[in-house]
Length: 50
Image 1 (spheres, rainbow, N blue to C red):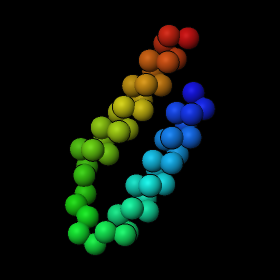
Image 2: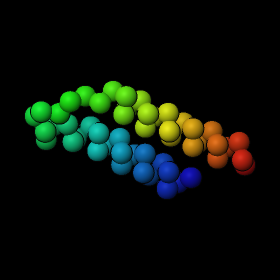
Image 3: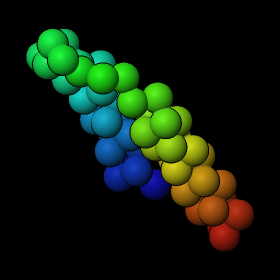
């Protein structure tokens, strides 16, 4: 579980910093929403299995 949290934290910082380096960055709202839903799903799955 701690690895999932660390990866999520890294991904959060990556998404905050990366768009600043690319001027022609297109907002990927569906991708961001999908990543968030994926983390929620994994956490719910792991919690349910425990």
